[in-house]
Length: 87
Image (cartoon, rainbow, N blue to C red):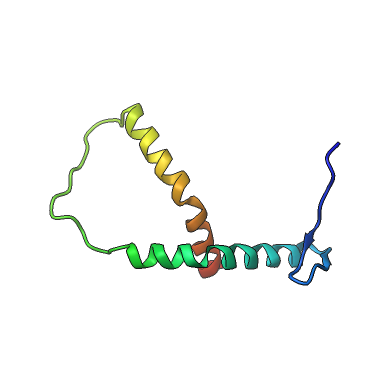
């Protein structure tokens, strides 16, 4: 049998309202991924490569799988950046 566990604040108090729970989740991810976000922002360059290849036709399965792997790696970071900037 699965036991439900509530969301608690930093002092251990149970949060009962959806808004308080959402705020706590935002704090949790912001605090835990702050170092990762800093690392990503310092390692990211905004330069355009000298040569750009534009593919013609439909992508191959190999190309699709590679892009999905990349998206799954950056999705958590992108979600945090979105929440910080737009919510």
